[in-house]
Length: 249
Image (cartoon, rainbow, N blue to C red):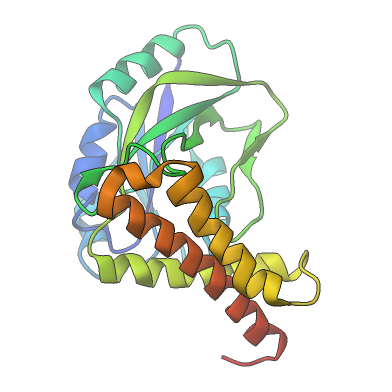
């Protein structure tokens, strides 16, 4: 059967590292890409993974594109530390790899936030390309929400990844602030003069889309929070772009 390398990027993920490695124990190689963790993640990964490599973190796509060519096997299964391969998804992956019809595959995600499953909002139809051929695929050179690009064909798996990005609310807001900082760099290239459209209308639309149009209100407080944080992150993106253009911290 086709052999596979599971790649797991990490950065201070001691609370996740054992479980995520256990979820990909069927892989022929488990390659952990650590960004100099200081909480014991690196040491624990050395005990559990096939191989651990280290590199200073710049941004997600850069880290993953550096790691992909170092995989031993042609097929890659890339799993973030806050994700898990479920038994059902494992079975489907192994079946697909017996006779792959495509060069990469979309995988949906079952998202969890604040201790609850997110059934609605914009997260309901969340999907990512995580199963792909090493030599035909790479990530877009974007700081945030980069996706795989390929010269081959793309299919879709039926089963989903388990995804729980939430640690604490404070940690989540810290993460969104980092994302806003990185997005400001990406958006600088394609955004003209900043106006009320960017500071008022776009944040409001981000909230309205998640909470009303995509039925986030049906997820109760969790859905309301996702909508609010989405609007906040968009607002902060343009605040930080405004600061970036003025060379201010």
